[in-house]
Every structure is written in structure tokens, then in C-alpha cells.
Length: 273
Image (cartoon, rainbow, N blue to C red):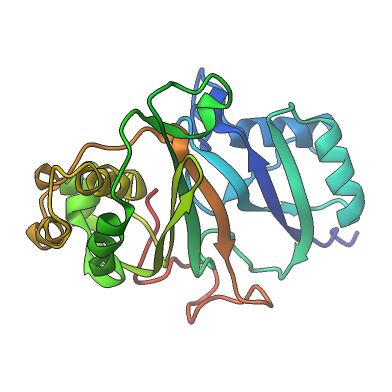
């Protein structure tokens, strides 16, 4: 008897992280990975393992998280999309399903990620959408923050912006940021960043430190000093999770690995977010 061919699928997933204890399955708490695996079980595909491109923490949102699944049953991508969404809760939705090469791995073949952190500023606390941005009572000097952020672009040791830096340093704390932008909004600003990989809480720690500059507590040059110091105690507080969104995961157009053997993590820029 001939065994059924295994098909590999890339899923693009959006979720509101407010009521999730992050992406990764954990005992006794609600996670995005577990909800997706339950949805597979409900469409008569039990035991499917959903492998994400990376973890997101409690309260962090995603507009385009990615994951892969390997299925032995012949299931067309368009039907899989409809079936999963019919069996998922309202705060998770699969945006797209695409067939991928046999050896494609959502995490190991990722070439980078994009994040945005949203801050709303004003004297009065917003009553609507509070779980989707960080509220600051004080307004900020965005020009000063932009000057401060210029030093972050490029390849650096970001130990000063990693939670639990001792553990992180044992695995390497050098990462590459390709783009860093601060966009002014009518009621605040967005901090957008693209990089080859991110340390745990790195984006939230960057925002917390940049806010110190925006409030006038520190000069713009201070961010470069913190970066060079390679000591988390030098930086600002960690910004709350609710303002952070994973915007997307970057892959080659043909989903091929970035110069690595299939099934192996890239030698540099491993993602720990």
C-alpha cells in the first residue's frame, strides 16, 4: 500500500492577543497555537502540529503571523482556509493558506520580521480600543525620538534591550535592524521596525527607552550610550505588551531558505521574541 504524500502548508494568521497568554501552547492557559490545533481537530485532522514563525508574548497582537503545518490528507488550500475559520474563535482568523515546498519551515526559513508599536498620547484616557495601544498621558518630542533612533539601524549587540540578557547573551544578542521609523499620528505615534531577528521583549524595551527621550528625561544621544553599554539596567522601562503588533514575517518569494540547509536555524539573527 502506497503511503499518502505529505503536503506542507503556510498559514498567515491574525489575532487579537488581549485574551491570549501568547502564541505558544502552555498547560492550563489559552494560547493561539492551541486554538489553531483545536480547529484542525474539529475538521477531522487531529494531532496536527502548528509550527509558528516565532513566539509572541501575552497580550501581543498579530496582523500576519505565519506558521506551517504538514498534512497527510489531501485538503485543498481554499477549503482549508474556510474550514479553519469556521472553527476558530472570533479573536483569531487565518488570512491565507498557501502550499509550501516539502522542507519549508516557518521559523527557520524566515528572513526577517516587521513589528509596529502604537502609542496614543493625550491628557484623557481613551475609553475605546485600550487593549490595542499604549496610552501616554504626556505628549512626546517625536523629532528628538527620531534622532535618537538613528543609531539603531544596522548590526549591533542589543543586549541593553533584551529582557533576561544573561540568558540571551549565552545564545547571542547581536541582531540586524534594517528599518526603524517613527510615524506621527493625529493622537500619538507608531514605532515601526524591520529586522532579521529580535530578542525577547526587544521592541518593547526600545519603545520604553525612546519614550524617555520623547518626554525630555534623556537627550537623544542617550540611546546610543545605552546600546553601547550592553546592560539592560541602563535602558528605560519595558513598554506594555498591548501596543505591539507583529505586522509580518519575511520569506523568499519561492519560500526557499536564506542560504541555510532545510530544517536548520539560520546561524545569525535567531528570533527569541
